[in-house]
Length: 271
Image 1 (cartoon, one colour):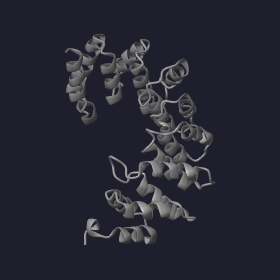
Image 2 (tube, one colour):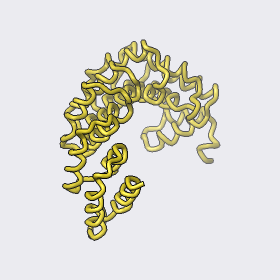
Image 3 (cartoon, helix red, strand yellow):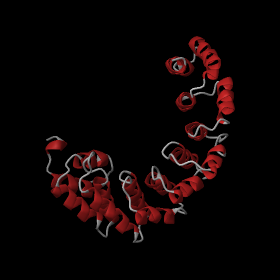
Image 4 (spheres, helix red, strand yellow):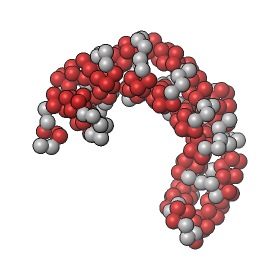
């Protein structure tokens, strides 16, 4: 029998009793497609359990129960913050923060101010989840935590935090711009690119010389083209054309694969 024909009770039992994680997200996904009181009640009950495995299952179901709109979203968000008032394991914290991240568009001031309390978490996976919870919230307190994470020793943390302040927030002040500029020469290519996009989004005129240097070095990518189209400066066209000619004749499949993106960027700039 196909999973979609299973009862919700059977899927919850499978999640609880399976010895491996092989079908975990398949089962979670199926429950998320069933935004009804039965699934909500059971997942809520699991999330309130004293056992981490049950908590995580319940939270993972609730955070995206009904994709748009969420089912009982207010109660779900309140539960997540209620759990933050208690000591939790790193794995539970990870599910809590990802759950908040999927539903953080209507948080109360009190809820928003709760999140920065966790700025000193050590676990890398929890940091990732916390960045998800913080990103997209237009509040200087949450932005300051993201700025802190842009200096993290782990490249992926710097990358997501830079994306959080650069592209997922429209706030603009000297601290944000300084944080982005501090990442413009980051050793991680994605982090560097996110910083460039973030400064382009804020129409910082100084970023033009950085983009020019990247094009001269042939260090381009999707995010660089995004920054170029955000600035919409036709001065980049000669360098783009030069890179296009190189890409067209390059025998390397990766370099040659950039031809459509280069052509599209040039076409958009010339409109």
